[in-house]
Image (cartoon, rainbow, N blue to C red; front, side, top):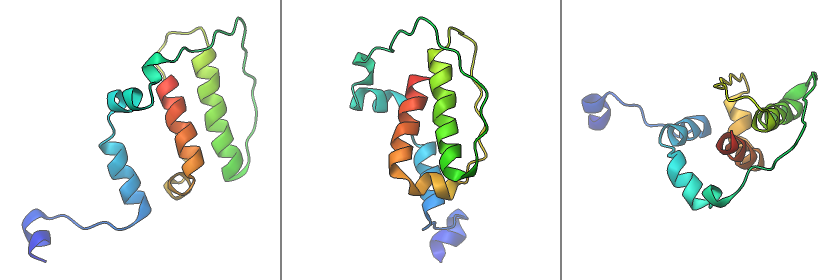
Length: 109
């Protein structure tokens, strides 16, 4: 109680808050070195054209985000990327496998 009154902070015990706190404290440079990503090479694809596709449901939404990153990494463009997602944080925090793929995709991008 005294901690709450003196710091005005609320203890968090749910997965979403933990995920967001970890995201806030994430250091991309440390992550790249930890997985030896700086030693990896982005594959060269002479021609890659992504098409338009509609995704339904959470599982397809996850695949859609990974497809977006794949198309972005393999494109020839050097423009900045702004990625907005309305994927529910509950779903993102629960699926560890997807989280690993998503972090890898972010790093590749």
